[in-house]
Image 1 (cartoon, rainbow, N blue to C red):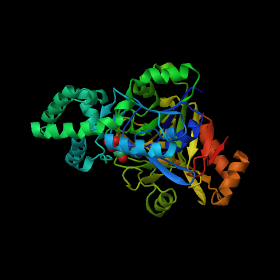
Image 2: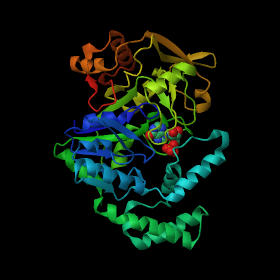
Image 3: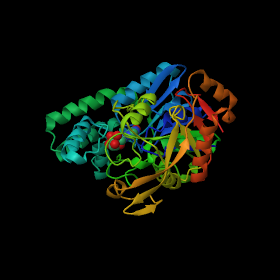
Length: 420
Ligand code: IMP
């Protein structure tokens, strides 16, 4: 499987980090192709909690770590994670695309200012400067990694960026220049054109794991706009965000949490209010990896998942957090929506319409016993060791989506996975 992409099919936080780590054993490269430090990829490796925001977390196993041109780079986060990875693995074979854009401190200030101006319609961003940095990229005021190596170009670009946003004069621009330039010696030896490297790895038979950030429903065009992130989060963006042709993507693994979570604003049709939502939140430690905000909790939504699976051309699924639902008497799955007096299986294109839908649920029996020592036994026993009700849940999803679930995650550890 030379080029595998790991894509979230919900609103992010599906457990892509853990699945990417699982799939990266033996891979030649782990690659980030979208988003920035708004992402929080986490895994428990040998009893230690690891979190990465911009370096692909698969690089704890893969031979090299690649940050593609489709990303937005926060230099301080990058430097911090580079040290963390060096501590884990010794010298790191890191490659940072010269074409990737840099998130500047002004982007973070603008992020909070823009949120303030949205009032009640605030997106609930992570505050990492993603929207403003992406908007400068498309308005062609962006600073790219390669600009950090060309000092005069950098000075000029910073002056323009500050002027465009009415954020200061020559003095401010010199401060920003010094801030950036002081970070260059730590990263400059890693900067290169990454596309040919990734293509070369695959041409020589090596495996590459493309690690998606956020989830399908947060895609700028195909998600629940405007409550989305400012980049593409779906499989079609992989070639663009890496700089390779589409033939370097051979397989799409869609990652689905056994329930739904969302952090930030926007509709969540299957939201579970009250005590049960709070119980699942605590059990699943559903607090943002990047911001610590409590995540909203909902039942699984097959209308949304059918849309996401189709949009991404998903070849197989990884179902995560199955252990978190253990102990519930019943679990609900949304199989269609009712909207404006009619039932529909179509995912609406506007949040106005999505906020009017009423989920129609199928109720399935819950499962018990996926806790403590039993989890280890289940992993050893394989799929047949899962409680029968949990298997029924897995098969119900497979039948509905017409896609096989190959990996079932039953704990936060990197190898707490049942292969089906
Ligand atoms: P931004 O990407 O910081 O601009 O935030 C836009 C929306 O995407 C907000 O609702 C965030 O909570 C959400 N978001 C961004 N990154 C992630 C992520 O990695 N996981 C979950 N939600 C995210």
